[in-house]
Structure formats: C-alpha cells, structure tokens
View 1 (tube, one colour):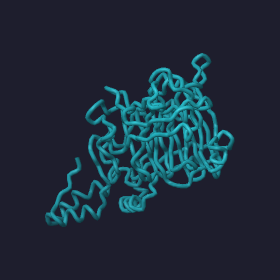
View 2 (cartoon, rainbow, N blue to C red; view 1 turned 90 degrees about the horizontal axis):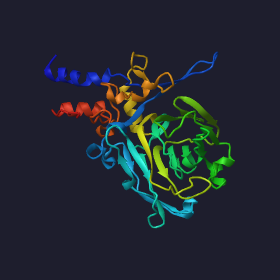
View 3 (spheres, rainbow, N blue to C red; view 1 turned 120 degrees about the horizontal axis):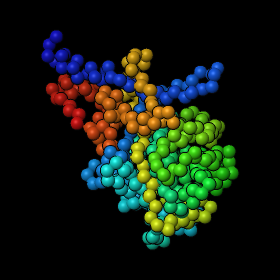
View 4 (spheres, one colour; view 1 turned 180 degrees about the vertical axis):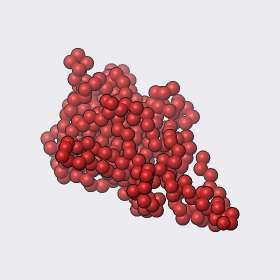
Length: 363
C-alpha cells in the first residue's frame, strides 16, 4: 500500500468508524405491555454556559451556536403597559461556574423595559428533544421562557411567571403552551384553546438549577421538569415545520401575564442547553446518509442520558466532551463544551483535500 493510500485510510478511519455516527437515541418508558419508544435524532447542539467565563470566550456575541437578540416591541404589539427593549447589554456570563445571565431591568428606558433574549443560529431543528438547565428569578414581575419557535402560530413554550410563585405554600406553576392558528384567533391567548396547561413544579425553581425539557415529535409534544412528565399535547396545534430555540426573559407590565416591571433588576441564569434533533436541511440529511454506514453496528447510535431523580449525573454529560462522538457535527469551540471547533466535513471534501495535497487541521 503506497503512502497516499495509507494517508487516506488514516484520515478517514475516525469518520467511518466513529461512535454515534448514525445519531443519538431517546428512549421513552412505556407501561407494559406496550414496548418502550425509541427515537433516533441525527443532529446535536450542546452549550455548557457554566464553563464559559466573563470576558474572553464568555462574550456571547462571539458564540458560534447562539446569537444575542436586539429589537424593540411596542406596548401595543406586546399587549402590555410598556414596550420591551431586547439588548445584548442585558446578557452576560457569570464568573466561575455560573452560567448565562439574562436580566430584566427595573428602570424604564424610553418607556420600555430592558429585556434579554438569545436564539440558536441553527434554524433547521425539526423533531427533537430540547433541554435547558435554569435557575429562575424570585423577583416578581417577569416572564422567563424556554421555547422552540418557527412563527407566532407554530411555537412550543415553557413560560414561568415570577409573580405567580408562592413561597409560603410552595406553589410554583409553569405555563405550557402551543401557539397555534386557534390561539391566534383567540388574540394569542392559548388558555382558551386545548393547547395550554398550567402545571406545578415539585420544587422551588428559584433555589437552584433544574432541567426543563421539550420533546417534539410528529403530532405530539411532551414537557418535563427534571425528567418528570408535566403534560402531553397532541393534535393539529403541534407544529409541522423546522424552527429554532430561544431563551427569553422579559416584562411589559401586563397584569394578566408578566406583571412588572420588577422592583429591582431580575436575573435568570442558564447553565446549559442540549438539543438532539433531526435537520430539515437537505445538506445535513445528505451528510448523515454518507456517514451512517451501518445503523446496527455497535455504538453507531448513542443513547442520550436523561436527567431523572435517580440519574442527576446526566446533567453533566455532554457528547461533545468525549472524543469521537460528534464527528460530522456542527460542534463549535465557543460553546463551553469541546474546546475545539469541529465543523461538518463531508467525505468528498476530505478526498478533494487529499488529492490536492492539502491537510485539514481541526482545532
């Protein structure tokens, strides 16, 4: 075997025989005699904000997976007493192992409440399981939201109203919402549709970090807190397209929803976001077809660890922190996980690089 052939074999072997090359599997327990459900997702995005630090790699504006949002919402459009001013100035990293902080300000700016939002740069997230570890604010008058979004009638929300938290009796509700055409017809008040559930958390969400999760399947959505199912919604209100993830913390003085503005600055801290999903992009679908040689091969599909009361260690598990588990994934260095940049690289590109005598170094 001559040198170019040896070089080709050495470079391609990790990408042909990689762990998880066919995807990441979610197994849902079913009650006997029904079999457990198993869903395989081909893509991942993992961001461990607790490992980023203030300044340097902690500048969210340099993050390659998330983008800070900057826009204004009028009081009329937001159906509130005040407008909302989303700005990167209200987004920062806490020092040490804190996480991503989204702050709602207490002082109005030109009649608007200072608010915060970050969104994934990838817009091709179809069916998937989406998880966020958050510590919510105990300051009354804000709405914290973790949601999947395509447009105002295809949206999956977990929303937390701090004014509704009652520490005296241990009542901590979360509003689970599918915004749909039916909700739009009700002036975007989903509580008058069948796609709204107010569930109650079995813990104080302001006292520590907990994982909130959305599983989005064809015709069905499930919501979780620390692995416990809060609600399931089915039917035509479930979105039918691809979208992206958003973390938002806001207030506009609407007494029926966010309340506020808060009496003092209020902060939500995000420790991590993990997303395992299928892509709507034909290019990414083609990448998967090329890399998934044999889905029945050992380790071709990797199980996603689920956070439960008996498996809290899953909070600290990231595929991106383990060698050879994210090949051909768009895993980026500025996400606080892998510390290196691994872009989607097809076999065709590798062949072209080798033929031209070039070498590609992944940092």
